[in-house]
Image (cartoon, rainbow, N blue to C red):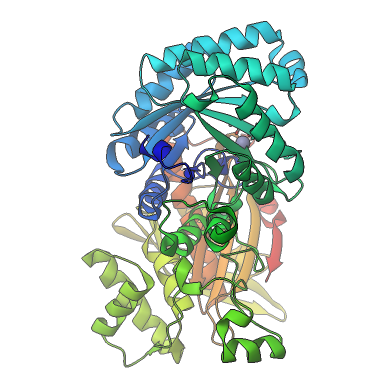
Length: 537
Ligand code: KIV
Ligand code: ZN
């Protein structure tokens, strides 16, 4: 890769769609993965790890589509060392203009003896054979020593030296269980590079998990130790406590370039949009105090801070909100704003919509203006992301009415579009949401377990948009999420549920899965549907 020539250039390897998707609830449809991949290309990451093709037909399809359609970054497919695994990954990435095979095997004593039940000698052979087999297909081969930070140093040296000799061009030293410390990881990387005679022929990479909250710190330490590729995810999503967060690493390198003199090729003004997109498609919210992309990351509450920032931003701000693409425009839209002002606002917020979506968005914007005096940037983002940029839908909401309160049994009446038809249904429930969800289940014929339901407001004020996120049980233990926004939270709740059902149907189609019968483990009786955790933020 060209990056190898610049010794201070850090390769950004994004694994949002592979390790990130392993977070509970982060299941993405193929269509959503494609949207994320296009956004990662705009963000200018170097490598997109698009999935683990052997894992499922859906993963395979997504990696293949991304390879065919996304220009710019190199597309990597993950595979274990078994040849059928590698064949499947190769089949998925071979059409990308730049592709990579990423093969891995565990190297720690506990993983080798208990999980793999292999001797160290067998592990070295499997790794070397796999790298050679990958190399017959592509020049760009990455080898990862899973659980490297709990592996014997001498064994790491041996396997890394042999896999480089076999043709690996990137060597990844993952902290799979989030166990290491910055002052331990930095010398580990430094010493590996020093001790391994052919280390100069490969780029050393790091991949950190956040079990002790140290993923970003460890990644930076490893870069200081000589690694030049970092594996990370948008919003830090990933297995258990997550992976190292891309935005934190990139902005740390940029903000402290004076200290480390390292740089990336990332277009940082795309960070905020990438974060919003991943938040929407995974249904995993970003905590308000999350570094870089949390809602409060650039907000100053204390009077003394506000006073300082007004005098000179640099008193309390080490980064500019504009540098991550968080524009602070004062142009607020309302009832009298026309299509032109609206479309200017969309460009300012960085959305490019086709004619159809622009019409849909403008219609929703006008609807909102009837209910709300001022429409903020947050409201507009919510309309666009949660309602317009959605997957092709089978069902949509036309109208919903509920009667509830006091002694009245909660009753809902709903009209939904099912393809070209309009269908009407009514139901009585233990509360208004239960009644609405019963109507939706009757119309869609989907008897689904609701796992989580949360409501929060997009902005302040009594006329604020309420945003509802739901998670429903998908096939094989997966979780599918949906989001809906409206000033009426019952309507937002209905939209969120319908979106999740549309996604589930889309997902089943992509994975060639059949709808389970109502007695299967994934569906539940109606009474169970009310057992979700409900949180209001
Ligand atoms: O955490 C890990 O070790 C991994 C490897 C497959 C790179 O995700
Ligand atoms: Zn991992």
